[in-house]
Image: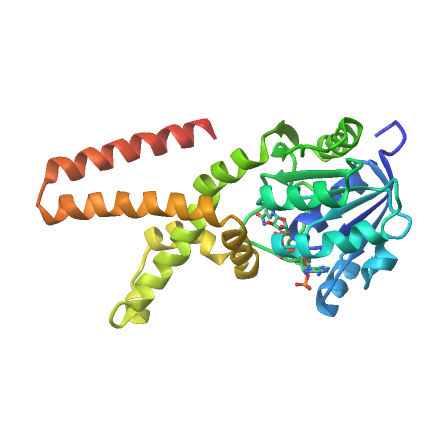
Length: 290
Ligand code: NAP
């Protein structure tokens, strides 16, 4: 980047897959002058240091946030809401505060209330995988990825544009979405598949001699349940925080399973086939689009 950095000091709270990747990418792009990471576990901080994910690792929030003109919260979503009041109290009055959490409504409500001057910017990068922690961070994680901004009722336009410029600098394409709609959409296309994958492994394990059966599995079980390798704490928080939309799409999924079960029970081959054909066409469309 030839022009001046967008931020003097970006402090990332939670130097894991997303926070660590953001720090690496922002520094590589020359978009921030310095990066500070706030860690929690000693082991995580040690990995962040040894991999040089940030210029400095702070072990408490106060020293990490000091001097920052941007604080990015990259911890599990319920932890974001828990830490926001402390960030509001400790950060410089002009410091912008953003988050990268996978659920937006409740975080935005907290951000709007704690930063009535419009310095809070809610966002969600559509990047990542089932890996987690500082060891998984990589500088190219956001290249070509969508990054959703969910402006709050109070978010100042200038604050949003500066944060948006940073997300673009790390290679992302920025889209805007209303927070409630975001939470409904991602309950459907992300939270439900994770829930289904965890539940499927659970169901297989619960069969008689389940462990032995798993030993005979081929690609199908492994492909379907890949995302059940994701961090349980992160997903626990997402399911609980996005409770209503998740329960709504889960009920729809249960109905879809019941429709299939009924057709199988009735020996109605035409009904089973029609449902499979429709689902396959929708999946082919999805693969084609991505
Ligand atoms: P992660 O790899 O597990 O990283 C989270 C990091 O936060 C861990 O290194 C953890 O460190 C640290 N941490 C937890 N509580 C903390 C605290 N109170 N203070 C300081 N550090 C703390 O998770 P992630 O995948 O980067 O996810 C982070 C956020 O991004 C979540 O809100 C998630 O919803 C969102 N997100 C994730 C993805 C994805 O695919 N992974 C995609 C988009 C958005 P220790 O455990 O070592 O203490």
